[in-house]
Amino acid sequence: MRDRSRRQFIRTTGLGAAALALTGISGSACSLTRRSHGANVLFFFADDQRFNTIGALNCPEIRTPNIDRFVRSGVTFTRAHIMGGTSGAVCIPSRAMMLTGKSLFHLDNLGRSIPDDHVMLPELLRQRGYTTFGTGKWHNGPGAYARCFTDGGRIFFGGMSDHLKVPVHDFDPSGAYPAENRYTAETFSSELFSNGVIKFLENYRGEDPFFAYVSYTAPHDPRMAPGDYTAMYPPENIPLPENYLEEHPFDNGEMTVRDEKLAPWPRTPEIVREHLAAYYAMITHMDNQIGRVLDTLERTGRIEDTVIVFVADNGLAVGSHGLLGKQNLYDHSVRVPLIISGPGIPEGVTMDGLCYVHDLYPTLCELLGMGIPESLEGRSLVPLLMLGRAKGRDSVFLAYRHFQRGVRTEDDWKLIMYNVGGEETTQLFDLNSDPHEMNNLADSAGHLERLNSLTELLRQHQRTLNDFCNINRTNWGLPYEKR
Image (cartoon, rainbow, N blue to C red):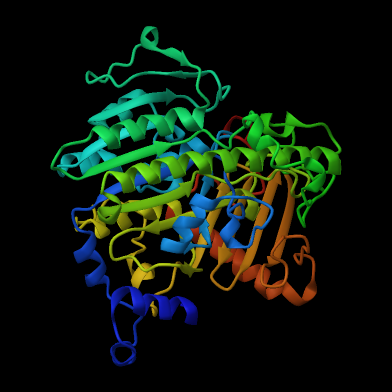
């Protein structure tokens, strides 16, 4: 833990320097969980927001004053990852992993449906006496939604839509959600879903704690922020990414997926600036709506008793590496913002331990004083929240469909392997000196030992996680029907 964060932790918890020196730790997990047991939970889920789009985290080109409030009031995990995706719609398995605490290859039907024996986080909280409210995007089936929530509103069963014409359902206690009950809302999506949770917070009079799940469709395309927000970001003033390229240097297996067709090739600086400007505008508008929700939480007197989570389902390229979408394993697509704040949680702390989004499920269980179900594959982040001697995962495994596999280590080395139609490509990056993943060291003789050790680590992850591909086979990048 950084010295500044450590001093802030001492102020927050009241632990003295002598006590810290005697224990050799930077806080007390017991203190945290005592203060957060039985707390409410407000869970914000962004759609396609990459990790480096928060003003308070050294991103001066974007305005996010309300997400910045989370950074100042809680713990930010700067190396949070999704494991990847088994379909082009990466958000489906990503959201299923978070909801179930399962890893990528243990989901059912690529995450499109969630079987009864995969008890989801809001479903568990409902069983433990929480009032559970859900609004916004739900991409994992109406039946799974019905198991999770006792209340809700403005529910979007789908992946994307026109942000001014979102097809939604009102909450149905029967859990049926027939198509004939769907209607088109004509309020911008981020405002629409925020209105839903604001109404819930204003009207809630129950004695039980609540779990309020707010799942935005922003900043997913179509990139169409309201005019006032668009005006904040003139494209000509937007800096290009450090890893901007006109075109990706080789076929990664998804060069013409839907996301990549949103702009012509080559990606010119003008085109990329236009897409980034619209992307940032949507994030700032969503941030404003988050602020309205936070103001309501404070006005209703619950902010001191509420654990707040802000996270995204995946990132997005938006011009980096010549790509636009999320169907790749570069940091811009697999790293996401993840912030936790609330009672007993240190303020203004950044943690760089490696973690996954599906670590949130056991983390919230522990924070709320509940036993962690043995079926979960995520790992609680409470030790990282509170114990300075704790660290994150030694490595994270990354996968996209059947032709991209990768691994990143705690000391910031990263391997990505591709097999597209039998053509193999390997990338090796030292993220310490090359955080934008531009200098491929795979063919450097001086890094052969590193390359071999990371390849073996990747194989170990594949075996542990029951990956359906096997990089030892020359045809591992081919779909089943062509093997």
